[in-house]
Amino acid sequence: LKKLLALVCCAALTCLSVTGCAGNQEKRTIRIGHNQSTNHPTHIALTAFQDYISGKLGDKYVVEVYPSELLGSQTDMVQLTQTGAIDFCVASNAILETFSKNYEIFNLPYLFASPEAYHHVMDDPEVTGPIYESTKKAGFTAVTWLDAGTRNFYTIDRPIESPADLRGLKIRVQQSPTNIEMMKLLGGSATPMGFGDVYTALQSGIIDGAENNEMALTDNGHGDVCKYYSYDMHQMVPDILIGNNAFMESLSDEDRAVFEEGFKLVNQVERDEWVKAVANAKDRAQNEQNVNFIYPDQKPFVEACLPLHDTVLKNNPALQPIYDAIQMYNAEYPAETN
Ligand code: GCU
Image 1: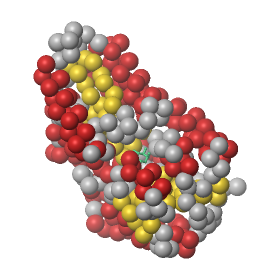
Image 2 (image 1 turned 45 degrees about the horizontal axis):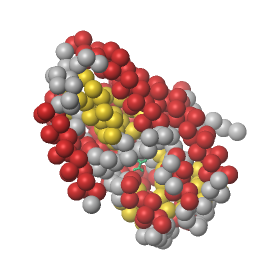
Image 3 (image 1 turned 30 degrees about the vertical axis):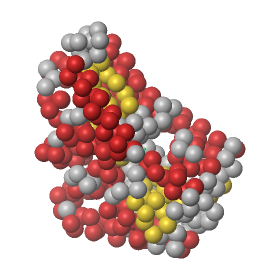
Image 4 (image 1 turned 90 degrees about the horizontal axis):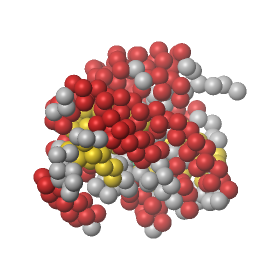
């Protein structure tokens, strides 16, 4: 049904882009899709982009933001961005590795020593450039990143204190080979599916748990079903705003410069909102949904996952210099010890 809705939506969108909206005949409509709610930092940031473009180039462009998988799952939306049916979408780095292997690097568990190291890496165009541009042939390019916090395991009724507790549990992961491999190493049974299907899968007991940031508990209701959230902190996977190449290449230099400023704004607004949103989600999960937060010893999780670094680097040696640059940031911004 979702696919059908997405198709109907797209057909409608195609008609619109040919005819334009009444009163906006000469304006180019820019469509951006994402899979979060309208409360989410992603949506707030894209709305800021919409206002910014409207303020600077409102005579030429109208930006429309489609939240909540209205245009389909993230994988559907990436494909729509590839073909130019829509202009931009936000996709998790996790699923982008199926479009270019270079994206595997940011999906590695325990890649970053600290959130500070993660942020500095993602802010360094020398590190992100070769990855962002690796999908050019596929029809799209990354234009900025969005913080999606730290991913942790959460389960309906079994607290995860160590990897051994994952044994025999079906855990939803994103549709990424690296994530499936990570779950194998940790001993759980990986069940890949799109984000929008997770709530029902948890509720019907098809899966025993999932892994995500704290916002998934509240904003997506997963904390209504899952009562244990365990800070093993296995990944910091960014979200990526991707744009259709043909559209971006069609922009004049002046307009492109405004769009580039707009992309920076998306990143800044989202990061500011993210800090507040996570604190708020944690508070609500604890006090309203009665989720128990667990702080396990991370060491056994790290040890189980580390072989994946070698596997990925061996399969794609081009990633080695990027990996080495990340280690330099890790040395500069090490994990906090207390
Ligand atoms: C986070 C992330 C999304 C992603 C989701 C998932 O919410 O921000 O981009 O789709 O996790 O687990 O699929």
